[in-house]
Structure formats: structure tokens, C-alpha cells
Amino acid sequence: MPELPEVEVTRRSFADAIAGAVVTAVRRGKPLRWPLGCSPDQLLNKSVQTVGRRGKYLLLALDRGWLLVHLGMSGSLLFASVLPAPGVHDHFDLVTTQGTLRLNDPRRFGAVVFVDNLADPVAVKLLGKLGMEPLSDGFDLALFQQGMKCHGTAVKQVLLAGELVVGVGNIYACESLFLAGIRPTLSAARLSFRRTALLREAIRDVLSRAVEQGGSTLRDFSSADGKPGYFQLQAMVYGRAGLPCRRCQTPIKVIRQGGRSTFYCPVCQKF
DNA sequence: AGAAAATCCTGGTGGC
DNA sequence: TGCCACCAGGATTTTC
Image (cartoon, rainbow, N blue to C red; front, side, top):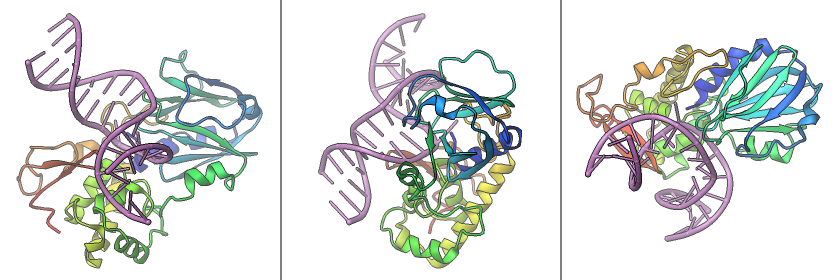
């Protein structure tokens, strides 16, 4: 579920509410993708200062250390002063003086990882190879074009890899390529500079609109205050195999790339 | 080396 | 209704 927009919407939905909160208890359920990296007791009495984001990671700045949270494929957070007893898929509760932050993740591809600082090898391993932030001013066109020229693989695969630009998952890669008129299978190195510029704009447009819409709720995503997203309603290609293109009525195609479904319009995406 | 599968999990869906 | 194969927002590890 969670690509950049869902993670950012989640961040905004509890960042202010948790700021300044002091950890009073930690409850863990089943193991997640990676170990916590410290004893739960080590988190007690630490305060949460800010909630940031890098790619699809949430970065909770503690007064000493960082908590990195990834939602994986099926994760979502809740933050509330009162929560029901944890269910089978509630695998992490951070109980604080201002409420409980709870990670629900049926597939357990997500993770909560503590590091003392961001130079810690564990943090570097997780965050070190991440590409540019697409919604920041640092999303540099020249670097984007240069990066595309380095890869002989399909442009969609380069987007998903996250080493050039972060946060673009399967939904938003498909949507961005549609907006830019680019065939997802095209070799990244063969993209014209002009098309690459259009793709950069398309990514920014799609992601920022998705954030405004509260993200995409395909099955069960909601932000930490329980609100679903609505971007899926305006998807141009994702999940629309066989349905008419919203722009030219041609049936949307679906193919497999790297084991993932790719949706595109064979008429609108020719480059 | 670099790119495609396999992998980690659980749940939902569609076919028979 | 039951069973089974297949699919799903991600990202690392293994295999060609």
C-alpha cells in the first residue's frame, strides 16, 4: 500500500500530536522484517521530538536516537490516546504520554528499527542508497536525466528501484509514466531529455495530488487518524486493465515487469 | 556486473 | 461450500 504519498499523509496525521511525547511502554507482537535493534526498555523515557520522512521511511527523532518505521506492503499506523486491545496484526505499540502509536501490518514486511544516529551502519544500510526526494527542491532535473542515461533497463524499473528518485512505487510509477506519455518498457537510457523532463514533472504532479487526496486506499490503508485516501478514484491506468483509457478510450493493457503488474495505455504512451 | 526470479508473510479473490 | 492457484502497495537476497 504505502508509497510516498501514503507515508507522507501518515506522517502529517500524527506528527504534531506526538511531538514532545515521552515513551512509557513498548509492546511488541510478532517479528517484523528487521529486528528492533535495541531492547524495548531502552526506548522508555525517551521523547519523540519530530517525525520526518525519507523516501518511504518515517524517521522519528527521539531525544537520543532515531526510530525508523517502514510500512512495507500492508502496514499502517494509528495514533490515538485510547486504542482497543491489540489484534493479531498489531505488531508494535509505542505507548507515550500523549497517546499510543500502533503499527498494524498483516504481511509483516514492515519494520521498526532503532538506531543511535543516522551514521549507524544499520541506518546507512537502509537509507544510504536512497535517491532524490521527488517533492523537494533537490529533485534536480540534470541529475535525473543523467541517472536515466546510466540504466539500460526499463524506465519503470528504474523508478521502482528508488536509487534515482525515492517513493515512487507501483501505482505512482504507472500513473507518472502515463502522464508523461512514456511506454513503461522503454529503456531508461533511450528516454529523450525532453521526455525525462516531462516525467519529472509528472512524478511531482502525481505524488503531490496523491498527498492532497490522502493517498490511495486500495484495500485497507488509512492514515494515523483513521482517514482513508481517495487518489485511487482518479487513477488513469493503475488497476484498470481492460477498461477504456480515460483519455482515448483504448483498453488499458497490463503486463508483468520484474514480477509486478504494469498498467499502461498503448496509444497514449508511445515514447 | 547487472538484471530477472525467489523470498519474506497473510489475506482476499476468482475458478472449478 | 471447499480447495487451490494466484494476486497484492516493498525491498532484499539469490540465481542466472
